[in-house]
Image (cartoon, rainbow over all chains, first blue to last red; front, side, top):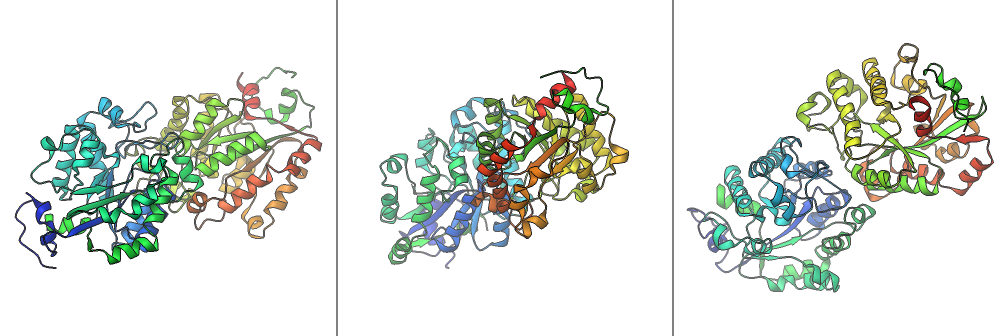
Length: 301
Length: 301
């Protein structure tokens, strides 16, 4: 791989292909599994998608009940790229989790039962910046404590984009730990943050994030969307975001009354990105798969 | 129900039948499901065993990932008797949990990763009495905080019997919260505590605890044991201890490399105590089913 001299992050996204040794307008792609650590079904499907599918990066909810299992896998399988899926919300009705910090240290992040709030709006109404900063920092520290070597940080429900101050905390943590953070204008807009004002010079922008939406799921066209997603790639950095899990009793229980990113949806994610046709398509394409580790090496090595 | 005047706990077990309005030598029985809250499979199987099986009492691991779900059920279904399954150990390899108290408040109970130790011996070697007392008290308080009204307290892996000092803490918590505690000479002996020295005057002794052992499971005679368990009842208070759960992907994951009280075992527990033949046997028997709530009413009302 050809290495150009890297002189600051400004416009890094424009130069990324060349810095990684590819031609200027190459379609770069990370196929990323979110939510590892959430459950056993999520862990096992993520691992299978990495081993026998086209998924090539994932991130871990370090505060979740099944994180220990996936952390053991991560340590024993350093060939697979992984990051920390910073978490400040718990969207599920009956399956609840909260902070890695003791509840008395971050009370503003927790509801009356000691769990994360379900929605970003509740988080913003209640959380102090100090608690957000402490908890997100602690999630990264927890990963190090468990012996992990994450390549990046990203955000569950993109809650770090819930308000400008959270986003700055997120940016600062990337700098502090020398880890690339996932910055996307699309996702910022989705959660109500104006990218114009809050993207920093140092941020590496994802050119296009590809993810299923609830309308596709409801109209049973999610599989079809995925089957054509490689055709939608643009030149520069693309990110496909999925949540592979098995549609088991456990996942049905976790996602009860929540079909959006629910159990059935996650099984489709798994099926689609482990299918033979998907592998074939990718092989025939002009797409270059890269990982967050490649990006980290360019940004911080 | 006839009420005799209750004048202290001494020899309560001898008088229990009469205090509850039964004849002196009646075979009293509680069919009890341990480990609710452990997982979704455990919760759902426990609920089904209560609703459509013969299980008539259960206890909740309040510190576990799925406790919120079963606590909601408990609150909405006060007709079913439940207690708190005090927990100081986590026997599983990949599925880990720890204290309800912040980890920095009970460091001696937690391993290097912040989870409970797997074995009673490790607990005894590491735990301070102060931390044990604080954590067990906090588990009961947590139940109250969640709006529960438990009828009794008992102990996961009977770890409160790991040493005499733990057992005293357990006894004192029963007195403090006016909740019956589960005291069994058999279980004390199993964990290495001499009943002669550590049973208090106030303790209500279970006359006979009936539970499957690993040899039965290995020799595939666990179902048979259960099918004849009602024949083994003695006069006085009997307790059948089971762990109903569905043998799902989740439970297989939790109990990996741990067939003793593993996923397959728990499915047998569920099957056996929801079967028609079990219900028939019980109907034809001279057994009187009672609950911990009945006992609490006699002891503390």
